[in-house]
Image (cartoon, rainbow, N blue to C red; front, side, top):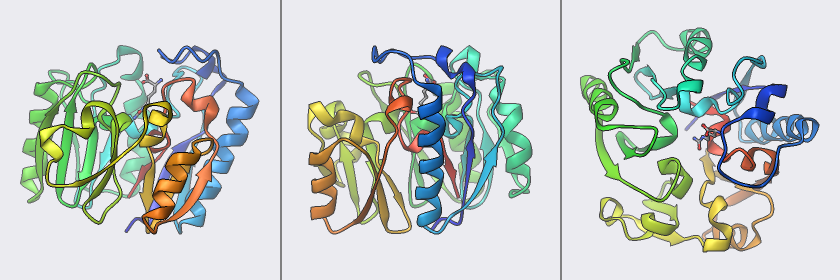
Length: 253
Ligand code: CIR
């Protein structure tokens, strides 16, 4: 159950955000409208949404999920693997402090972006990606264990972040594509296959019983609906151009 979400308005600098998508530059005004639609979708799931101001100095700052991990017991500020994103962390800290007393941080010795961290109850799966390394993962696991939570690492090679390719929908069930479909780390879960031509839609978000699905992926939408979930489509094409999925646009807690 989630009660709050933190989001950050995209800045015009998003035109210069990191991307390997080859989908062209985002349309800033459309991105702003889509971001508003995303906020409305979060609110429709019962969340109180805290909207932080745009940061012109950080093109990727709207992807707030990567710079903090918010657990039921503590918050962890990350040390992003992408150098251009490290300065975003201090800007999320004040907002996180409004809601958490227990705040930890990943040291500069480790790299961690929370798009690589998937929460399954009190267990956190941590993808070892180009952005998250073993040192960062081990620091996170040590912090989690202080609170009776657990973590484990997941090797990966095909995608930007762990949650680019696998996402938990509660009920022991995950949406997955590519290497995550057969990864032994998730053998005990029911894995729902997302087809390659809709791979972007593997990044759906479960919020209080509703599953947010990116707009424009009809097979995934039908699959999730057939599983019995209430769904809501959210248009995020301008963020897809920057390799950003639905989940990375908010911190939910
Ligand atoms: C980046 O490359 O860092 C951003 N353009 C996209 C971050 C997406 N975050 C995520 O999937 N958790």
